Image (cartoon, rainbow, N blue to C red):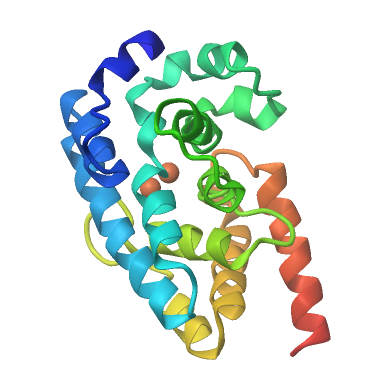
Length: 205
Ligand SMILES: [Fe+2]
Ligand SMILES: [Fe+2]
């Protein structure tokens, strides 16, 4: 499957167009719609917090690009691409799509910007000391979630965002950890993000 991907990339089209087209050509219309909604939200957040809008667009449109690899093949795909796996990722390979999407972005879409690649890599779990772009893509993905109706955490997330981007991310991470019984696994990066934000809130209440 990985070898098929380059034939779907048209060098005359933008990263945005190629990403959406690739998802559609693998019959992932729902993910294509989600990617476009996350992109719109990420660009809005980038504008609001005075960050680079183009970087937000690239990271957001590519954040879920590797879902074209089915769950049962993600561990094998990650190993073939040299990704060292956490035990939690072997237990729940769905979560590996964030790290696989980074590889797709660099290998097939020519993305070299470390900030963009990092924001893709941690979009599900966040991690310690996230950048503003990491937080933008993480939160855009949570706001424009891929399920029906409004997410249950939306209000607390927006209240945080009214204070700052960091406070929005902090509220979201806290919500995830307060509800960790609903998560299939607690990824070590999420645990790291939680520690980071709890420390930050103690320092700046
Ligand atoms: Fe995702
Ligand atoms: Fe997503």
